[in-house]
Structure formats: C-alpha cells, structure tokens
Length: 234
Image (cartoon, rainbow, N blue to C red; front, side, top):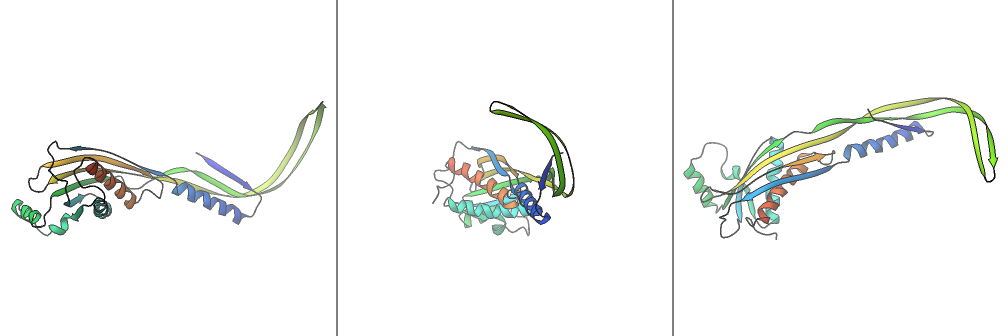
C-alpha cells in the first residue's frame, strides 16, 4: 500500500483543496498507445480506392464511435466512407446478387470490415492520500560544540500534538481495445488488405470510447494510405 501524507498548519479547507488537485491529477494523468500490423495484396487495383462502405462489429457504444471516426478519417484522405448498414439496412437477409447490385449502383469500390474486442474501463487501486491539520508543541535541549569554523549540535526533545485527517483512496484507469480489419474489393470480393492491432489506454482522459475509436481507426487508415490502397490526404 502506498500512502501520501500531507502535514499542513493551514485550515482543513486549504488541505482539502490541495488533495482535490492531487486526486484530479492522478485520475486524469495517463497516455494512449496504438500498435498494428497490416498486409496488402500483391495485386492492387490500378487506382486507389476512392469510395467505400464500412461494417463494424463489436460492443455497441464503441461501434458507433468507430463508425463516426471512419467517415472523418476517410474524409481527411479524400475518400468517401459510408455506413454499410445505411446501404443495406439490417431488416432482412440479402443475396449475393443484391449486395453486388447495391455496391455497383452506388459506385462502391471497397468494403471495409472491422471486428472490435474491448476490455472495458478497468479500475485499479493506486494508493491513499492522507490529508489534515496538525497542531502541537515541541521542546528540546542540546549541546553545541565549536571547532574552528565548524559547529555541531546534539539535541534531545519531545513533541506532542493532535492531527485531524482524512484518508482518500485513489484509482488508476486503463482499457485495452483490439481490432481486426480487412478491405475487400467490391467488384470481386477479394481481400485487398488485412490488418490487426490494439490500443492501450490509461487515465480518465484516454479510456473513453472516443479516444480508443479514434486511435484504432487512424491506425487502419494510416496503413491503408501508406500502402497506396486509398487516396492521399487532401
């Protein structure tokens, strides 16, 4: 167990203010790291993919955030990315012929399929902050010995007092999101690119759906662009 002790001669309200700042710093501090590996087919289309639909499977709230980020990341690179469920509403089952007709009708060149796994936000005990006010008296006596320009002092004494304190537990937050993705050629159904990766986040600022979704999608589109499968940034 880790205990942080603050002895203050000021009022309890001042001590609580300091503790509040420390607690906020512990809760919010953190970082986010993303790693992934992607592989492109050796026979890519003659021109980069300019229009695609995306289908995402995984935990509901995270899926929605990823879908929003796909449209934003695609737009940055001059690509149009629509939600596959808008083109093919999940109201019934579609035949292969219907899917091909729908893709051709909307001039869709690629289908991005993403599967997401998520640990959820995990809370971990980080220690306890003890804050309060101390008051008391001290007395001491001793002997000073001087030799040239150097003095030494030996003292003995006693101290007594009272401390009123509050103990506040603190926590760290972390989250891991994993994903696999593939981009299919709409006209043939063959894989143009496959990839997988994970996002590790720590701290309240970085464990939300938005941060994890943004990092995952950015990694996917960065790799697609780097390999020349989608258009360049506008």
